[in-house]
Image (cartoon, rainbow, N blue to C red):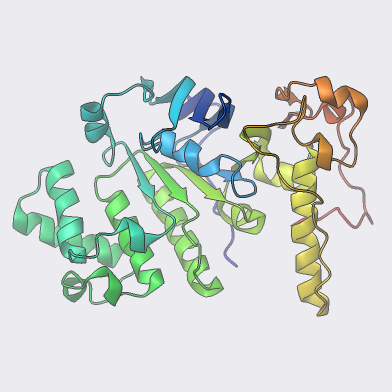
Length: 354
């Protein structure tokens, strides 16, 4: 597994991206609105990576799509702010998004086979971005396309320009997607589970490539994943999402070693149990009981309370606001806000979660 690269950016610097109170709603057959993202807030520094983690359907991907203006109809951004280098992104017109998308913020999608156009060659798709976003002439674009493919680790790059997406392996298609994403030198890179369906070796290569490009280009990066071990490798900060809300935020090492929300604790314990099972040859796995709630029918108060081992009656009145629980962490847990979970001591089996 690759190691998480160090970052030279200072947390005290002004953030590259500041997201405050982002809310995204989808109408339902009833009159209720399902809030896919509800009052989501976080920041991303230049040259650093934020990991957005949580179970499927918690709001990770739709949050990313709001930051590039691609929330699918009938969903819509209903509130909040997202400023990239001080410029508000939410509410941009389609024409304004066309100028921002790719040149300022770019995205690596989860499935390159659906993101790449199957009827155009790799060269056509990459050169189009270079001509439209950087104004390169045809031959200049072709030369730059070869350089980009070579830069992301595709051998015989010049000959690969003639290939169609179906002629490439899954790992190579993802590298092409990364080349397209960085072609216009964006300031912010969004990666939506970029290693899904890839084997472990290729997964590590892709994560290492994203980390290397982030450092070389001093980009801010948001990595969406449901896998805490992936986030532990490459991220500096982490935001844990549950039922559309951010329930914990902080430096990745602090959050994983000393989780302040019971949901984060459960996710981390499951990873630790799985790693232990691999080490001793057994498959025992500690899991979170229950299921995430429907976004159109959330329980009162804390939406995690029905699955929480620490729940108290007053949790049904708690509005899940983030509040500092340690010097570096924010949590939306009423119990932990009152009494933060202490760091595990020497000999505690949960001392080293990852």
